[in-house]
Each structure stands twice: as structure tokens, then as C-alpha cells.
Length: 325
Image (cartoon, rainbow, N blue to C red; front, side, top):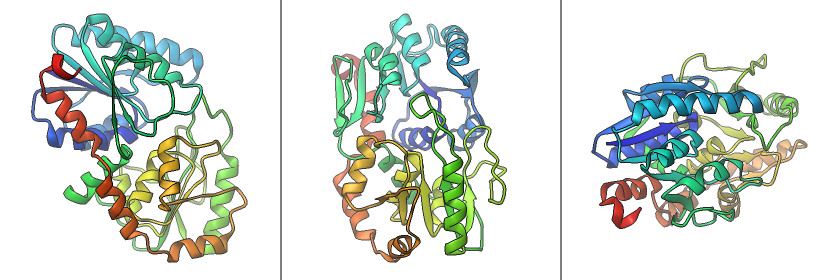
């Protein structure tokens, strides 16, 4: 049996795509974080919620220790391969129990904290070709493209999991992540979104981070299919990663407002002309020009040249472990 640990909402669609290719027995665990468990059940079926997400440095350490203990009891003697996107708990448990593991990640931003906790313990790491950070691992499998290629192909081939219906024209806004490498308020982002919304006369569907509830925006109260939400939008302002790259690969007018130098996978899409990098002083005329551009052929060409990382991982998981991992 294979064990998959899903630790963040953006990863859910990747694992749905993986399960499209992999037909063996699977045990799926998630942690208590926002609507992750609800989203995982909607996309993946039966999942087990084990442990929780830590809010700050001390709480993260305590949550890690608690979760490692619970997961160890759950998977001991039940699985022979463990898979995750950046789950430190899975990496530690698999290493401790002698279970082979594949850890996927694409964030090569310093200080590589999650990679430091996961890659050294992995049997193999799955990373995009552009990944420039240290792998810390003896084995790696690189693929062309980005993880979001799997997300978009899953949507295009299988349709939405849950449709998002809004008749009025709208834009999607996703604030910066609450992360160890980005300890800063998101007030600037909310102000910018209000300004763009007012000048372009667009409603705003705001996808908040934990603890956020800015007023004046449409905030989905239930789990929504993020890609279906993006597909119906007129513009996407993203200060994070995954949703911004998904929007670019759907051919939507997309602005990356990530406040630091982005990871290599974002840089790829910027160089391909699939999105632009914005600043807090965004020029609305520039956005109007962006919304008029045709980019569908560029998207199709990029998808053709990319590998599907979910398929790559499924193929690795399906062969004899000693041969590949």
C-alpha cells in the first residue's frame, strides 16, 4: 500500500491527477488546516485527518512532534512507499520506519527550510528541471514544466469538481502566503486589490489565507474548485504561487505580485509570456492591455513541451521500488 500525506490545499488537485494514473491501494492522510480536509474529501474521496497545522514557530514544532507520533502508529506495518509534496512529518516517519519515500517540491527560495527537513530523508526527490536549490538527496527525478501542469490538465480533461457560479464579471485575488520566509502584513495587497477593482469596475472574489476576512469582497464560504473559479474570471492578481501559476496556464490575464523574487517555476511562466510581474503601483492601463492579449497558443505550446509530473510520479510508484527509488 502507498501512503500519501496531503499538507496544503493547493496540493489536492495534484494528488487527484496522480490517482487518475495510479490504481493501487492508497492510504491518504491530511492535517487539520483550514478547509484542507473538506477539500481533500471532495477531490480525493476517503481521507484521514491526523494532527494539525502549527500557527507559529513554537506551535509548528509542537504540532510536528504530535503528528509524527500519531502517523507512526497509523502507518507502521501497513505501507511500503510514502509520497508527499513537502510533508516533513511523512519524511520523518518514513525514514524512521524504513519506508521508501518520494518527496516532491518546487520551492527553491532560500532558506530551503522545508527541503532541509524532507529531502535528506527521502529515497528520491521529484523536482522541476529549473530547481536551483540544494536537493540534499542522493537521487532526484527532474521533469520539464511545473506541478501546475498536472492541475490544469486534470481540469481540462475531467472538468470541475464543483462549479463556481457568478454571473457578474469578476477578478480573483489571492494574498501572499503566511510563511516562515514571508513574515509581512498583507495590507498592501488588500489596498491594491480595492484600487484595481474600483478602476476596472470588477467584483472581487478573494481567496483568503488563514485568519483573513477583508470586507467588501466576495469570499467563498464553501469549498470551491479554485481552477473553475479562475477559469471564469476576467483577471487574476496573485501574491502567492500555485493559484497564480494555474491562472497563467489557463491563459487568463495574470499578474504575479509575490513580494520577493519568485521561485524558478514562476520565473519560467514569466519568461514564456504567460503572466507579468506586478508592483504595488500597478498601472491600470497596463492591466487593460493585458486583458486584451491573446495567449491561448502560448499556453498550448507550453503544455505540449511539459511533462505531467503526476504521471511521472505514478509511473515511479508503479514499478519495482528497488529499480527506481
